[in-house]
Length: 501
Image 1 (cartoon, helix red, strand yellow):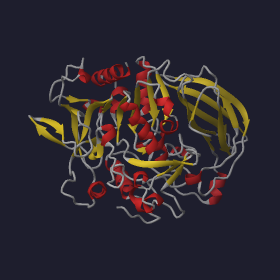
Image 2 (image 1 turned 90 degrees about the vertical axis):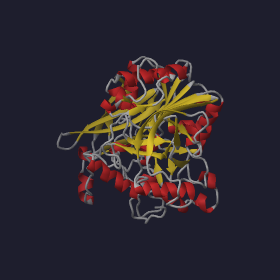
Image 3 (image 1 turned 90 degrees about the horizontal axis):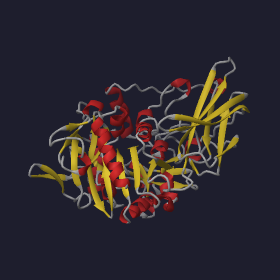
Image 4 (image 1 turned 30 degrees about the horizontal axis):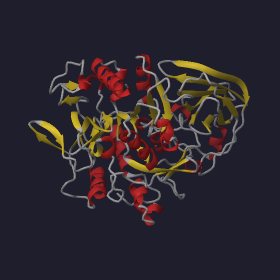
């Protein structure tokens, strides 16, 4: 799996799509349009100049539309949607999309700027664009940006960093994403942030969904977590993945940093800065899965992301023997920095649950250590199953190598899982055969190594090393919060209260 044809789609992507169909998830893609038909199609699309801003800065919006006039609404989306800015009768203009838009951006001119006033709270801000096509029917576009706090850590002790690197990796607006390849150089290995994203891979024109819609995006996981957390009285500050790389001082202002949902793509500076925070006593909670699986590099002042993934031999850093920064698995023996060292767990020792290779999993965690403080107030006992009603275990799961001692799972630490990591709960998970082969080659140098795991587990656990790191070991935790599961809510409160104090 390490070599790909330039016109191929990576094998894991094909299997993901097949698994989605097999599990009953509706997947459709937009058929190719003839050039003349595409030119006639009504549209409105937009993206911001960058993804995060502070109060006092100007948000530049780049808009392309077939409409003569359009309107814009900006709303903060938290426990509820709050409209904060609107403007009507903006003159529209249609801009050509470059053939390499997916790799090097749309390069549209800025259409309008919006000043971020000091009273806009930190949060996710949805930009809704509305217009009418020539026949009078409404058309709509969507963009987003994040407002960081003007006083980091002063009003909120918790920082939620949105998984925007992963959103971009799955965004195939304007060309291939990191799960597809094309004939041009760097297609399938580079993705630009300078193109529509909020709507791009989530909803294509005519309301159809991209094949990647279910795997990434604000609406899938973070939206559910934020709705619950803010309604429950938690004050959160917000950032994007790149802020962890570009703003080391930002991290130092918070007691607790959160990752929610699917947080797959991490750069070395992101990881360096978060690990430094933990060593200095800061805490992290990963309500997420498949975390820090692929190493990527941000380029062009953070406007593009490089990820060679399975084809890492094509990475110039591989050829130049800059092994620590090769854009492939963090656990690759050439990098020698498995993600377990940060999170305690790895997708290599987990896999899928209620998806693909474990299609009929119960969707819940089996409790192993009910006396741990994380379960305070739940009355859970050993062997109870948590969260199955709302399927909080599913899709992609992370685990660690362990053995049983006195009937309880204990990490071996051979895989990089830190000393002191406690396995609190687990659920069965398994990689596809192609993932097993690639993981085995990356970890051990051959595809059939004796230590490769054929079965893994979604592993909820925790360790302390300076600060404390908690992980659910799975992407789907937010579904329990959305479903108002009282036990999932109580455990989440325990984590947020203890680790942000």
